[in-house]
Image (tube, rainbow over all chains, first blue to last red; front, side, top):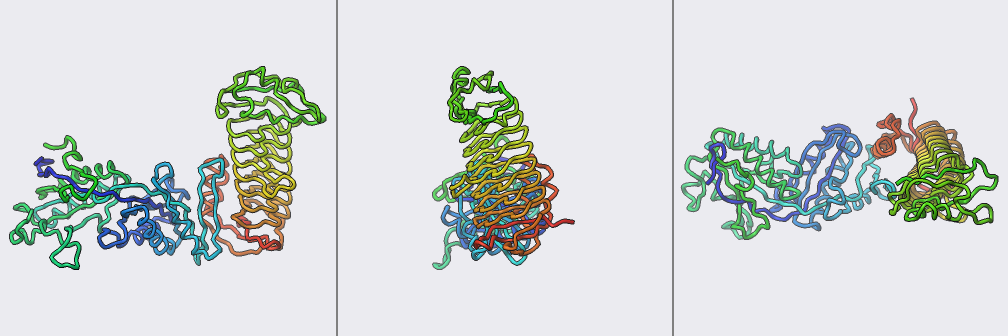
Length: 309
Length: 280
């Protein structure tokens, strides 16, 4: 057990998985509408246990960072494979962004950095019912880009033909254990705030936080995931294999997906460092499955480097 | 590496055909070999050295080769024709067929250019600081497609039938565009910052053909159907590209401005577009 700012950090690892991620840049007339579309698009996308993908807002983009010079919001969507990433993107952009006033959608991962280019705009163009127009840019003199202009009642929806996707990491995590609900929530909020300054990561759960956690399976045959009983303080003395330390009465998990392992590591590090600043935090640990399921084992001590003491 | 070609004469009644003035041809040669390259004066084969004095350095790789044509060469045709890489700078006017069928690289003309600039080009960038003649970026007679890629920027005005049969690529006209600009277009984009003359986009078909008029339009053909006034998002991307990648800063003034959208040419069942900036 190591200590950071006096808080115990368990010598364990977060077990993470290979996921495919796609960064989508949404722009709109103003930040309000870019955020609105982004929030709609990333709704009900916390975990692939029950959702079709895991998605979240990466960050807001200034006018100087977007292709059309308008305010924007970057969203990252994750799924198990390249193939399973396509359908959620088509549905979510089609239902949540195309429908949202003034928005446009652009690729957020350059072709040379992507492992695959997904033809999302090319699929959505059919919504134009034959009146869609292909927009070409850069044939033979600039980076080649293709867009589709789809007429809609409000004006015109613009979407880039191909969106870049890459092999990323899902399920990076750490668990914050506190003496009460208030301190644990405050620490978790500070952690998420710090994590969102790291490029290339999202926290797909509500506000970035997962209060329930989950474990594989349940006592019910129809339920493949259930509450994380070893980490429920309310049953710490009645559940025989409880892992809740004495003095801990509230626990929150922060789950992080990233476009690469380094980004997830960095996000875990800054998140943990922010959390341990809060009075009342007793211990930090992480969720794993003994290393049997995930491709990545991200040790807390490695993330934190020489910060112990 | 910079190779300078200094014209030995200032005028020639019969133009010289010198497609050898191209980085693809000169790269890897010695200065003596460059001067021995074959050019045509009428039906006579002559050497480049009879008309130009070559000095400077020759690169081994095409992409590293810069050719500076140091003077008025309005009597020389086909400079940079079919070039694939490297750069040519002409310090004066230039003759017909400059950069025709060009595939890559860059040509800068500090004066004006003759007809057929960038005809049927498929890549690269041509920038004319003065005016350009007729049939810029056009299809040669009998050919179904004109410009197929690349970009031509003319800071001055252009002549008749600019972009005729254009298939892809971008033409930016800083000044006025003569009649029949964009005729038979079937793809590609033409920006006109000055005045657009009659017969604009005549017999234009579809495939994303687009003419954007930032100045006055003399008259649109009745076979172009007016749709709406709107402020399309895609226009911002083009205007930003003009400003940031091509240095046409005044394009930024039109970001966020409404445009009138016309579709045609209905005479041939076309669904190309002419967008005209709303004035006032």
